[in-house]
Length: 305
Image (cartoon, rainbow, N blue to C red; front, side, top):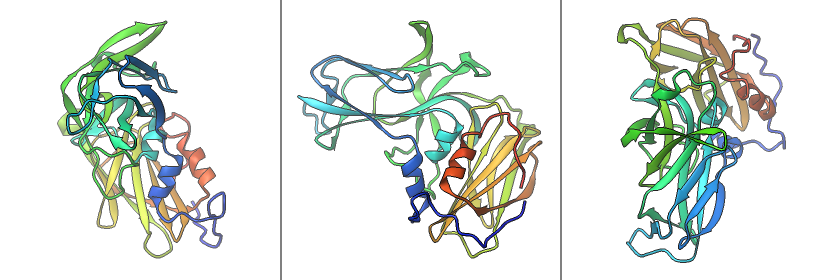
């Protein structure tokens, strides 16, 4: 792939971003805000089909005071590899790959102040049709809570909840994973990808660009046909991901920014292996980056750099 640095391709509006986090904030999944009354039993439904149900008086202030009146419930639904990347999140737990059925983030506020749960909130998450092992799902929660796109330099990981078992319920012809949560956070319903320890490899990629050091970079691995994303972490001149199944087809995508200019690099490995591969970055408009993201995780042919 030829890298051309002669033409600057800025954002659609012509105003450069100051960081990749600004790009993620603009295009990543946004919270859906529901106004409900704390003294009433409530059920809300997100745009992607997530159902949240909680009894009356299920919330309180952090100081223990009961909540009265109207509150805001913020629900963010993260479904699919593109949404995970735009949230700067992964579907891994302690460097082990997870097949995700969906991620959600839930918080509640009154007059801008955060609230906490007094009683459990029931979640019903739609069951995707293309899961490899729909009966092997467990409930995970984020190790670090944040209401923003996850920071570029901070590690993100999922951990099993204290009660990780979920069950399947059918409602109006649609199947849901059903579970309860006892605190506001980000949650993922996911299953381990079975991999023998001796067949795991370390995948490393080196971004190549004919310019000075980037102001910010993010790198991800995805896998055609799997709802799985691995966030890669910088070590020296390369990004690395651990415990990747050897021989698995994988695709790397690197986003970069320098002086407000967005950059994109992309490559596919027909077989993941212990080696360092070069990925060439080129200036790219945000509309083209968004189009590329929508193809991530599909079985469509991918250009290699």
